[in-house]
Length: 163
Length: 414
Image (cartoon, rainbow over all chains, first blue to last red; front, side):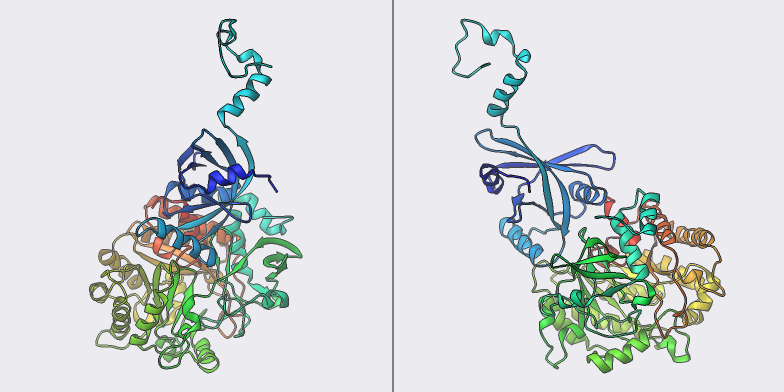
């Protein structure tokens, strides 16, 4: 099973954290929308609550499940933490105890909300896109991309540039 | 899908890359039926799952026994299963890692869920009848079968594939299912069902044809109205998501039905889209209304319910039965889709069910069509809905689950 950090799980579970789900439409073009009800399940999967049956995202998620396409979720925290999770939609709950749980949860958050589908997305990869961390890695691995003015002798910085 | 697939299924999946493999599998499971292993039946929990016995039609093995009512695939699609004897080569529902799976030739193909039981299944009406024998359920639909008899059988002119009367005899005797429902009691059960959060999104009615009345079928219409009025008392809106599969009524009857009730969509199953075969295989419908009359009434219904709110159903495969059916699947398909297009351009959608030959019916000893035929039919009917922009939300995977063609329409934005 994919290793997922506590930091990322906490971000996903925090409703104040911005989450965006990107899917592919019938032409293969990306379509990204906020996913405010995205959450992490005890089974180590993402749960995306899709309120509307005919939304582009709901149809794209179905297309992904049917034809084995991936979707991606971006999580962006208040301190600039950023993660991109790609995964496969593996199950669409439209009834049963789990659906009922999420239906009631959504209705407790939004007045008179409906729920079309509780999508289960199995993560297949996680990429840390947090700038402060990625910047260090990039500058270590690709030192020839750094602009020289940042390395000037009289340039003062507290940040680490090239080891 | 996991592991090696059964050869024919594999070929069809490769041949139609635009059709989801899950829908091809579903169609083949409907075509060949299922057999539940002992282990699979041991997973069945009457408190948690729906069990067979409430349906208006019977099973391919002719038995009423405690079995899962039907199956859910992981895309939310239902497979309305027909328990089938092993010697007819059905798919096997068995257990893998503690859960039910579909198997074929020893290969595990897909995990399935048994339909969850709604809360009201545990309750009985004030007259002591189990509520599930008054109103039954699909994953998101309430089923009301007001009258479990069809008067076309009075002079032995029932449809050749239909076992409604033999099922009634079994159901009444073995399961305490009333042949004719009390409208008030139906309303009470629907009210009880609606207490369950998020469970139901449509009310559905169907019964056998009742030709009596001042005008033929007036009694059937009035009975539906009586039931729907009681059901309507449970809603705060005049109209509520609902579907009826009735006889093809006159425009006057349809208008009456629409005006008096909360009904939002209308279906009259023509069963087969060929006049000669309709006359032979549906002699009661032919005698009372006729093929052209049936089509005209469907089109008339669009004026009442609106485009995209009227459809007709086919029992697909009976058009290929001997001795009068089409000899080739190509010819049957071409003819069926041509007739379906004639309806579609006038606002009437066509859906199909995979014909499951039932014992004790005149066609019971014949075979249904090939998987390739059913997939081509599903693609063709779906393409007509795209061409004529016909929504099918009232008869889709969520509300019925028995039509591979309307499964394909899930991807449409309307």
